[in-house]
Length: 304
Image (cartoon, rainbow, N blue to C red; front, side):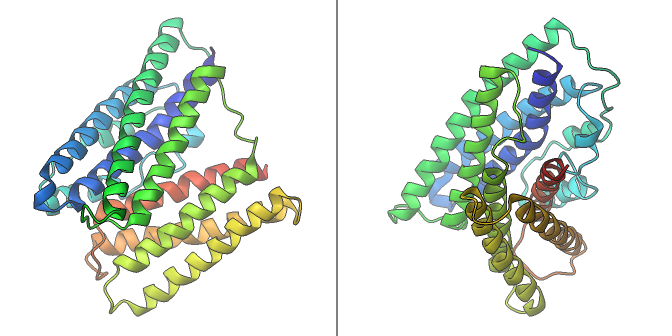
């Protein structure tokens, strides 16, 4: 195990542990009063990922790369305000101290790590594997209940599928790190692009479905992004079979992701400023923005 193992593990958790805790929150807020047991379990997951992320932030100072810290995938300029607004609207206690500490993280100055840090990160990974596995089973149970008409939730079935796919990717990457020490993110580029293009398409469709019917201009923009990323998902899959050049797909995905990232930033700001009519919780806007920032960093790595 090396600096690569430590850095990749911590950077992965800085992004995905926050995503998972927010998935848990979105699930929690979607249940009806009948299903308080499910809401309470979702809240337990949210707090467990809070603790995981808090541990990761403590270990990350002076260790993770500047590239990740500056990418906007860990936090954005809107994250803290979005957390405060979401807490105000929902009454759920969101620990903003984690976000404040992330804003103060320093990038690595060298490429050396102690054996004790390697061991601590390995323990964090094992804890994450257990926690993510449990959350996946919870999400699958909810989806089964919804599809069998045994439960009503205000979350779309596709959204539950969407957040389960992300959790499976996270779990697979942590397991890979524990097994082989590092991940070569330049392997299976087209598979990653197909995954994230599909995520971006679905974000567009969720945004479209949560806007007020009066927001017709934003409807059109969201519809266009949904269609564009559906096309890019298909192109990435076609390129896997050598039907079109892989570089062309990466360049088109990069251009489209820059555009949707700008749209998501403007939408998040508009929601926070009460300038957009919607039923989009502020933290959901910031959540999708961070995922676009994460994908942008990956695409730039693929391109280079």
